[in-house]
Amino acid sequence: VQLQASGGGLVQTGDSLRLSCAASGLTFSNYYMGWFRQAPGKEREFVARISFEGGIRGYADSVKGRFTVSRDNAKNTAYLQMDSLKPEDTAVYYCAARYSNIGNYEYWGQGTLVTVSS
Image (cartoon, rainbow, N blue to C red; front, side):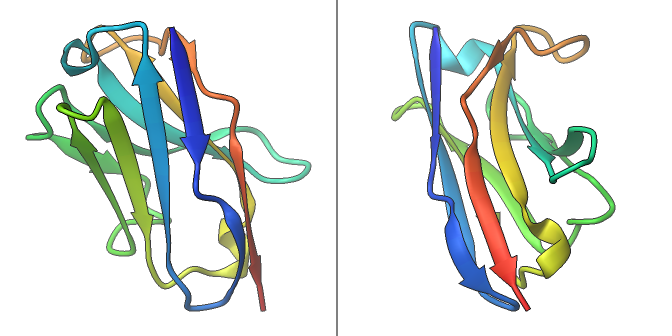
């Protein structure tokens, strides 16, 4: 199983970015997908999650209303649309997959760096 996160970069406050997570080696539609991030010197934290067919989505309070998680099961890809970015969104962003709608994520991507300058 491989999860390949991409789309990070250096942007300014207020800009937008879309992260992608391309999955292989699994039946993508059977997996809940999650996005997490880890800022320098901080613990990894939950950002967003999306259910198998995309009907259920959840967000951390810090990104609610600014970030949108989605998925395209035909392309085995999950997305994280990030709008109105703030310097505090600077982090390495990871995608993850879990077989169940609860419990731990079994598979993790390698991370993509998002840097938001003020």
